Length: 362
Image 1 (tube, one colour):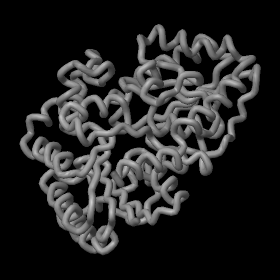
Image 2 (image 1 turned 120 degrees about the vertical axis):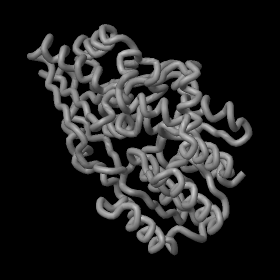
Image 3 (image 1 turned 60 degrees about the vertical axis):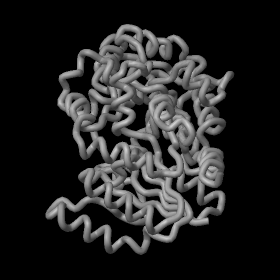
């Protein structure tokens, strides 16, 4: 069986393709590298900086022989190549015509998710934080669902797919309403063989090393603006107990190396679970804070090991939950081990790849 994964969000497809390879699947990864992250891929579909309107279609035509003849194609979202909607619609038609079955990941701020979130029925969403509703990115998303070309693409691609795979509870809830028969939930994949346990955390460390990675222009969207303020307050309150490292929009490989020297990584807010960065950190044995409440664990079927610090709360409570780490210095190593175990049990790329194969081959 031949599989093509096209498009990328924070190494989501990269880790899935590693799991599929472990299972002996003939899989090709094609993407832009997700902007500055420059995530590894086999077919480069990065948008050229100059003469973008003309040069990218020519680049895609040249790559077309590597994008045809697959049993399964999975696109990362309706706008899987981050092109203009009318162009993405055409690219989708070409992929569908030149391959067999096509699936879509429900991920990112696409039409059905944004439309559902704005009804107020999700438990967590960036649209529910009143303090950032005037942020240009948020305002633009609210306007986009009324944009005809954005709406048409957001409806066409999931309608034209053989199945939709939601990567978190929030996306599953939003897409399940519109496409109840073909929407499936599968957790994010992490290659626990590639991302080995490297944590240096021991019980009673002199200082706990906190790490936060920022994404330019997406701080309000991810809630990292609030996390940054809380971490700064934690550092100010406990200068002798806390080290703090904050980086902004660094390439993927550099980011991974920086994580290795940390004990605790804070990921994202306004979500039912943590993202790829948080899972990579857990695989390495870091303690992670982010979105992680009862509904996330229930969706995974995890009843015993719940090592993620849930930060979907007020800034005051967020600070208090991080302070707990300072009070439990004598059990940090066990916490770290449980963090990696959580990823192995619930997000290992081979286990997750098997779930994808099960959906693809139904």
